[in-house]
Length: 119
Image 1 (tube, rainbow, N blue to C red):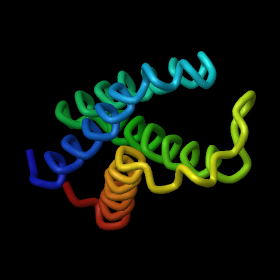
Image 2: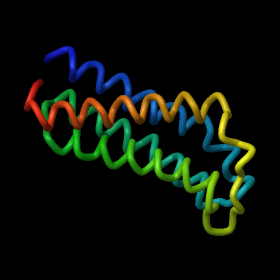
Image 3: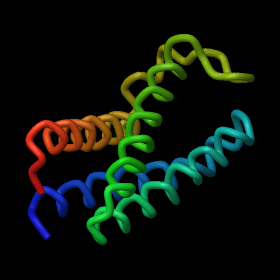
């Protein structure tokens, strides 16, 4: 397995781990948000497994997890989510920033891999 795949695995596990750690607090805002955080974590672990097994679906699932998380973060701080008003003051939460960095890096790796077909 190439280094790019290992980096992608570490990044997507970081994304999922951050969401699993943050999930219990999310139930206070809306139950669905907590369940989405857990689903993100489990989806990230499945993506990591798929990438490890050299399956294209792992990369695609990882992209959906990372991009969905990124978009959810932006939406929650700008327009808000169903039953949860926007939280513009929460842009710089440490776990949120860490997750954005990991998500952005995974998306960049996916894009670079797609353009150059590198492994």
